[in-house]
Structures are given as C-alpha cells and as structure tokens.
Amino acid sequence: MVEQSREMPTLDEVARVAGVSRSTASRAINGQVYVSAKAREAVTNAVASLGYSPNLLARSLATKRTNSIALVLSERGDTVLADPFFARVLRGVHAGLSGSGMQLVLLMAQDEQAQGELGQYLCAGHVDGALVVSLHGDDPLPDQLASSGLPVVLLGRPLAKVDVPYVDADNSTGGELAAAHLVERGRRHIATIAGPRDMAAGIDRLSGWRRGMTAAKRRPAGVVHADFTAAGGAAAMRELLAAYPEVDGVFAASDLMAVGAMQVLREAGRRIPQDVAVVGFDDSELAETAVPPLTSVRQPIEEMGRAITLRLIAQINAVADQPSSVLLPTELVPRESS
Image (cartoon, rainbow, N blue to C red; front, side, top):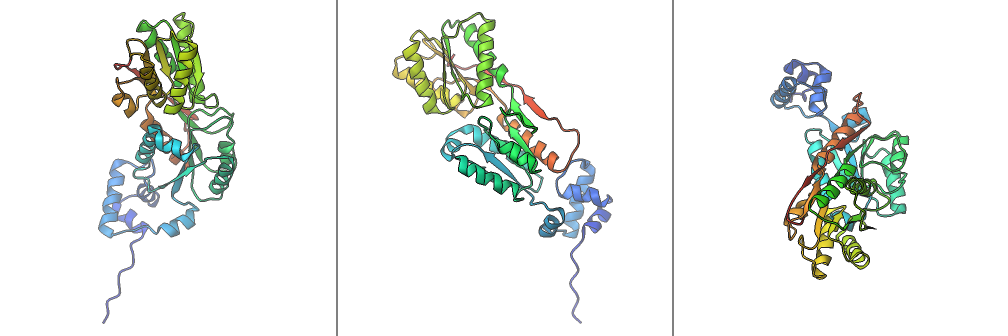
C-alpha cells in the first residue's frame, strides 16, 4: 500500500503549535509590527518544526499586494553612481526592509518623459509603495502617487505643498553650524558654494548659513550655486576666487562640492586650511579620505534611509498615529581642512 504524502501545514497549524492567534502568526511571518518578541520566537519555531512555507502567490492574490516597494531616485544614473550619498541611503533602506519579507525595486527618473512613464508604472499596482529621493522643484510625482492611493514617503522636505510624509535632516541648523565654525576659526571673508535652488536641501543649508553669518555680524564674501557634484563645486570655486580673491573660508553644501573646491584651491596655490578653510556637508567617506581630511556637517543618512522605509511599511500596513514628518539632527565634525 502506497503511503499518501502529508499535506502541507497551514497557517492555522502554525498558530496552534505556537500558541498564538492566526492573525499574530500572520503578522510574525510577514515581519509586521505589534508582535512581541516571545510570540515571534514561538511562531519562528513552529514554522521550522512544521516545515511551513507560505504560498506567496496565493497570499499576494488574496491581499492584492506585490510584497515589493520602489526606491525612486529623481536623478541621472551617472549622478547616482558618483555620489556616495545614494549608496548610504540604499544601505539604510536595506536595513529597514530586513525581516519584512519585501523586495526592493530601484527606479531612476532621468528626464520628464521617463518620469511620466515611471509614474504610470508605479500607479499601475506593480509595487505596494514608493520611497522618493532627491526631489527637484515642484515635482508632481509625489502628489500623483498619493492621489492614486499608493503609499509614498519622501526623503527630503518637498518644495511643493503635498500631503505626503517625509524624513529629512536638519539642514538649516547644519548650515548655521558651518558658518559659526568658520567664524570661530577666525575667518573674515567667508563664502559658500550653495546647493541647487530647486532643492530644499540646498535652500535650507544656505538659509542656515546666512543665519549663522548674521548672528556673527559678518557680511558674506560670496554665494555661488552648484549641483552637489565635484565638477559643480570646482566651477563654483573658480567663480568665487575670480570675484572674491580675498576669500579665506568656504562652506560647500556637500562633500562632493567641497572636494571639487579643494582641488581648485590647490591649483590656485591656496593652502588648506592656512589660506582658506573649507567645510563640507554629509560627513561621507570622502570627508575622511580628502587631503587634508574635510571638516563636514554630519547628517544621519543611513538612519534617514531606514526611517523612510519603516515609515512606508507602517503606512502600507495601515499603522495609525504616524508622524507626518521627521527631522533628524545634524552635527559638525571638525577635521584638518578648517
């Protein structure tokens, strides 16, 4: 007589063996919140002992979920690959997804046409939610996604008025700290290489720097805007030296721009920090490896990536009482460049 194979264990059996309710077992298996450590351990042990394997296709059909989220970078591919900021964001997002059972889809909108197609793709049910990073101007994408009912969280304060949650660093205070530090170091002619005019990070860091200069009763030696790249920082530094040759302190609104500016200063025969002190923003790996090591304003980039991910998962799971925005602190890390 041929022995019949045993049927696959069910979620109800997992719950019975673990001694928890079916809903608790489901939340534990799916990595959701509001499950105690004891209950999660019991469910994990029950899954292992029974050999339970959730039917992902059936679950996605029942819940109408894809078990995936999108990370949308509103930048060109070459910009993303060259800037260590995005790698650190991705590390934070990966940490936030740990244990959730969700997959990540990486999308980049390089122009208006691609952005329109990207919006259509996201609104067509291919993902359960979207993280949007590096917004420019009054980008319509967040509002488009939110209006379609797709959960969405932004990294960075949006310039457009949209009812979408976001996580950001305290860029304004960071700019103020940079200005105060250069003043404390005895610099008299302090300029800034500000970020793009169409990004909140650029606007807020410049605003904070101006506030710090005003508090110290110092007149700015010059303001030039650039695009958060090393090439942009280099071009801005050449412009500053031509217009304000007396400059002896520079705050660059990103480490990449600061590195570009330092290269130009060396080419011009200016010693760092003896002739010109330089402060960057991000406290990336570049700050530690620059020559000389770069004083920088630290923003908690990995923590920001993790925070937007956890906030999005909470929104997808309809967790109540979530904050509409989160502002994480910045701090100045002094090194030899200043």
